[in-house]
Amino acid sequence: MKISYYPGCTLKTKAKNMDCPGVAALNALGVELVELPRWNCCGAVFSLADDDLLHLLAPVRDLIRVVEQGDNKLVVACSMCYNTLARANLLMRENSEKRHTINTFMEEERDYNGEVEVVHLLSFLRDEIGWEKIKESIKVPLRGLKIAPYYGCTLLRPQSVAIEPPEKRTLFKDLIETMGATVVDFPASTDCCSSYQILSNPDIGIETVSKILESAESWGAEAIVTSCPLCEYNLGKRQEDALRKHDKLKELPTFYFTQLLALALGLGAEVCNFELNHNGVVRLMESKKFLTAA
Amino acid sequence: MSTTDTTKGESKETTSGKELVSIFVMGKKYEVPKNLTIMKAMEYAGYKYIRGCGCRGGICGACGTVYRKPGDYHIYVGLACQTVVEDGMYLTQLPFFPANRATYNLEAIGSDPEEVYKKYPELFRCVACNACTKVCPMDISVMDYISAIKQGDFEKATELSFDCIQCIFPFENYGG
Ligand code: FES
Image 1 (cartoon, each protein chain N blue to C red):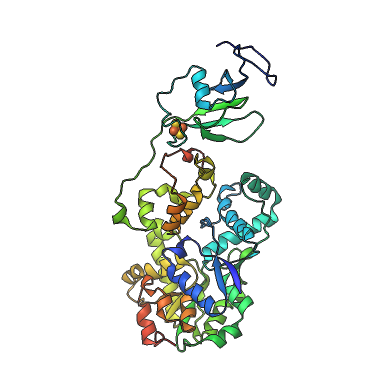
Image 2: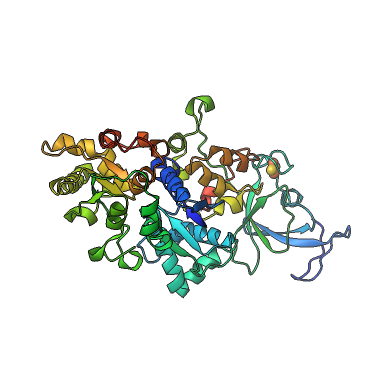
């Protein structure tokens, strides 16, 4: 099966450790993620100003590229890109006045009416491949690894583009169990990681990160899994700032779900770009003997 | 200037038999022979280029001109030395403005979007309005090559931007 895939700028640069294992894992599951031949930044953040249509041009252009491929479905792995693209798509479907203005402005493009379906890779795994099939393909079960699923904001908010209902969330849980690991659901799973506040208000950002780490650790997690490069930056790279500030916090390795999936499918560390992770990721995997190839 | 005065829409002729069109330069109306380029037409009207003109061959990008046409909401851009005048054109020659031209050692910086970000931070504010592509006098897919840089795909960016001579056609004046 082939499916149009939008990686996003960060996954092509700083978060190759999310992109590469994802493409490899899906390949192992018989799905070719076909990167759009032409795409631009999704806009990163969906603009909430009601009259700000300029910032919708970027995501809408990307959706037009999908139609140009003769496709009507787009898989996105990055939560932020997913959120921005899905919300822009919804607006193009539902708001005829803004749709008209945007289409008129982008006269060099074909008209777009929201005909593409934007799907997050987690939903795609469940709905198009299925947990059963994935389970059959697991070569290195992540047995004994206690993983805290971290959703953050953009997978679940707002409700109109949530990949599942926040209070009945099962996607991460089902994936973790499918890979043979143990789920550690924790109260801060859907808290905000502080997002870009980490740059403008680092103190607030680090406190927010510390609370999330503390929550996951207190529930017994050995690792955190996420699907967002910004969450990974805050919880992973900036974790050392949190550890420096709070003695009681312990190091908590942070992974992308695509890395864990690739490992569990027996693709080895080669496809995981662990050098881009932080905080004892490789050490933990080695101690669990998950890095020995299948 | 010797012309036969006519009302708009009817054919106009000079005494030498050339058909004329009306153009507006900084709001002032001039009758100029049709089929001239904007640059030639302005010289015909008595202007002398001491800036804003270089190769006269459509390459250097020095002669960028913004214009509008009657009854048309679009803002057009073109090279004065290449674009032929049309009846009713309102022309604005682009003034000089300082553009950012970074100096760097290509060998030393490698293919890293972060390095480009440091040299040209404005590129990373791109909202994909595509005004840069529309305004490029050489029809280069500027938006696409900027996107390729942001994606770390320098090979694609190089291919797409190969014809660019950094004339710094001032697209920032029109973009988001
Ligand atoms: S004068 Fe060089 S492009 Fe027009």
